[in-house]
Image (cartoon, rainbow, N blue to C red):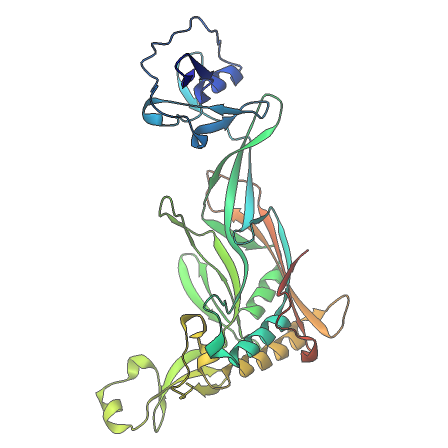
Length: 370
């Protein structure tokens, strides 16, 4: 039991988490033998607040109070006196859109890349007035959590804990993997412990990058591989420095390069074409638009042309419009832990591009949840 003083003449009593666990444990023989107000394990000076609320079997709130106001872990005692941790009845992998306070157990999303590309064009023409909050990419979700549930005596599930795990994204079929390789211009693969960087070798090169990031917990500072998924236009094969006579990579610049060349200009190479950096020093590039597609001459338009060529050649016709091409990627998202295996979540990306640019609207939605 736990106690809370409410007046000089009275007090309230509460079942603790330990008491609840004993009442619900079918193996325990829980009998109240006596009642005492001199229990030394209770801190009577600590105020009970909402941070120590737990739920009863009928959904009502219970309060817990222990030494120093600490909340005791939910445990149950077996007859032999050994302590066992609470049993998790089920676990769900959940995609979380933290900004919009949305969650999905499975995610089927259509991406309108034409609207996104038009939006990039509009920002490119108005760099200096672009808000600092602008994001030059599409984020489909912020992170992926694992929700753990317990089951009460009435068969009702209660959320017990939310955890971050390292995740694996597994393609459902070879076609999904090939579509991924078509859409992403560079990615890293591992085979028998060997790491390989895979560059786009398709006939029509992709200017896109699809990135799944890591996530850092604010409470524990632990970094796990369950971060957000973003899609961005990144038409970059490599960054070079063009001199008066040739092009060199930055690691090959030396003192002789500086002595013998009047001009050494940063340049992005994409699809065999060099795009020099813009030389207008009057433009102020804030961090949110200080990226290659805005900083290098005509690189954005090269990326848009490549996107149209790629979707026209590799995409399939949309069911509603033959002028809209679709590349679909299906993945199973699962926990990378041999000792813990919740059911995989389904992630389906329907990447679309309307080849008619007059239908692009930079202010319209970039995505739709199906």
